[in-house]
Length: 386
Image (cartoon, rainbow, N blue to C red):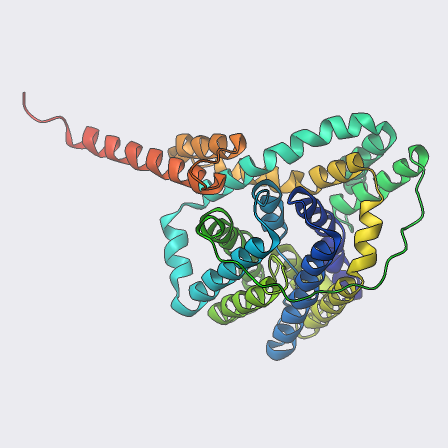
């Protein structure tokens, strides 16, 4: 139980934290803005899951969405912090609407999951590619992180590959990089942001991010809980995650939601007897909240590391998501061409008319899918008499 809760929290507090700092850096945020984003996402995300767990005695665990954070690293550039806050609040509204109206299931049925997975894989491709030169520039870190990710989990399966990569990567980094002392800094925490709501923020950030949170976090969490014989209140969980995301957005936090892998860990039989598993989620949530309180020092710790190391660990953290997304997107032969279209547009990071890549990628994939469907219908009915 303790191990599961600890490991669940580490998922958010290692790769998830590095991804968040990376995304904020890509967006050009100041440290105070980064700390507010970081603290609000972890404190509110941890509190959300703690309250849900204690209310329903079901092991809900999470912080912010790792997939949505990775997506933000490619789309947040060009938006100010208030504009990002407005987009995050709108994303929470969409998630809340999905929970209150039951639109989630209907919308997800309209967009095949294979296309969403293709979108995710395409968006993550650049992260995966960039880790190669990063590993070359830090050879000891690259080799040891690779061993930690690919080899050690074959022998020892208790820790996830990403954590082994971080541990071994840090060992390698200590051999080739001279760490400087942490800069002196005063305590900082989340502070309210006056949001700016823009059309670009809605289409470029809010809608794609809501889709990613719903499909890659909430749907996974709910499925994992059900597979472990729990009956989570689906609409209430969606609505609560939407409200929490809106609240986090008011402080610049990108999301606060129930997490897929974290809930899966805490609800698994390895966490103990079914009636006690929720205590693993309680531990996970408390650790996540404490991590958010320490945001100003965690940010300092991450930022003193060389950028190549951050890129390396970020790539390895997302490698599993990339492979799974690519595999899923190519698994349906009937949707192979639409999936490849979506993947290609996403990988090229096409941004036109103020609309970000995810919208164009899904639009292109859906158009190709519809065209193929109409072509097949036409052939099945014949061309008619001459």
